[in-house]
Length: 319
Image (cartoon, rainbow, N blue to C red; front, side, top):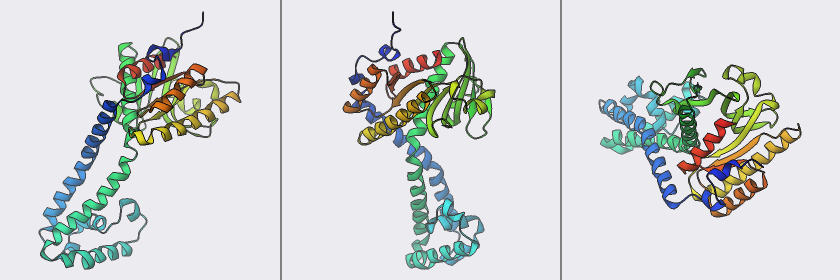
């Protein structure tokens, strides 16, 4: 008797994968809240800038306030990234242009003009970071789901912190926010050591892969990632919620997984492959279902569907 296909535990048809209107709306609300959270430091900086700049009586006096020079540079339209490639003289010229062409013509309202222009540059930087926030939020949600699956199975694990690059033991009480900066998880099950890594470049594929489950402990991962035989499962994770970009996300993921399967097949290997997406439209849902039924994909889930995500994570930690 053949083993039941894992996706059948949470999917009955391709239609089950489709992201509902309510899920799309909730996704956009979550993005809006995240945008506001990320904007808070810039708003606080703008308030401080206003207070300090208000101590001057003329725009030219701003140059005497050395602690606001980075803010003046931002108000001049120079991003943090651009400023790192500029010499001191270029920075001074940019600030002088700001004062001469924009602040002085504003008269007594030059402080407000300064603050508005500062926020304009910082807002642009925020917009750039928000283009990648869907992926970060998707990774956070998946990590929490995997952590929950491990906790319920009473399996202890380690987490690779994003900032420090150090593996730390996960404790639900002490590491409640561990998902925010995690690059990977590692645990030991009845089948052996398992390490789940995000965004690593597998030499056999020669490109970044969103998710890789390796047959190794976290101490061995630096060597294991170059050994094709230690890859248990690989996946594409797409966190964008905008329905307009759903098909494009799937096309990118489909191409990536085709390259993955071909690369491993060339070494007579066939690790599991699966897809997790936040925005899944009708047409692509049927294509994903077709790949599941044909065995081209081993599993799939809609990131916004809690039941599907839980089922997939239970399958993942059982591999």
